[in-house]
Amino acid sequence: MLNTARSPTVDVFKYTDPLSLSNLGMNSHKNWLRMIITNVLQRINIHRLITLQLYPILFELYNVRYSEKWVKKIDDNFLEYHAGSKPSLKVPTHSLPRNLKYLSTKFFSGDVSGTIAESLFIYFLHNLGININLVGHLRPHKRLRGQFTPDFVIWDGGILNVKIDNIPLISMRNCQLPIYAEVKGSTSQINEEQLEKALLQLSKVIFNPQYCGLIFVAYKNPNYEGIIFEVEL
Image 1 (cartoon, rainbow, N blue to C red):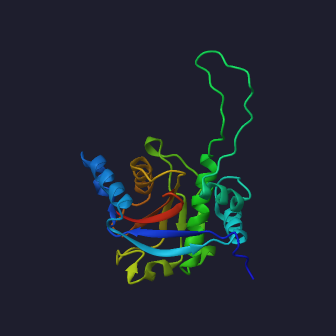
Image 2: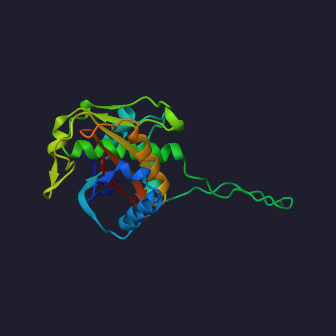
């Protein structure tokens, strides 16, 4: 039996309106992104899909098999990042020259935050009944304008039929496989820059009206939560 003593929960939401990549070409796309972020933070146009009960052993398994970066023990890292705890550094008693300051606490690692988000995304898919054996991490590959391609590709057709509380994960009726997904992680709030970069990455592979994708962002509010955005052309 799995031990739930150190098993935090993470709520995952869905933004109810699909995001259109065509909006990136508008002069006002920055305002559009800002409106979406405001809606998320004010709980407008979002629906809670599921509460994930995180079992550390499974979380680390997903990390080892699916995340990009070589970061081990993501289960222990998650507990510390979830709580927002930052260890203190040893600070000498000697005074520093002018304009210099000692570093007193450690910074959170971007690699760890990204690994947490990718592991959470796989955890989320598995909880929805998606066959994660049909999910693969794409190799990082720069293309036009220096933007990377998305993180994951999903080949399980069951994802097209997933509904939670009568809310479809993918509402586009004629969407075809594969589904591409970009994952972002943060130890602070979700922001426009994350969303814009994720949309640009998906735009590298979604160039047909029958293609669609997903963006998953894991962020702190004040503890971790996740949100899914559906993306179409």
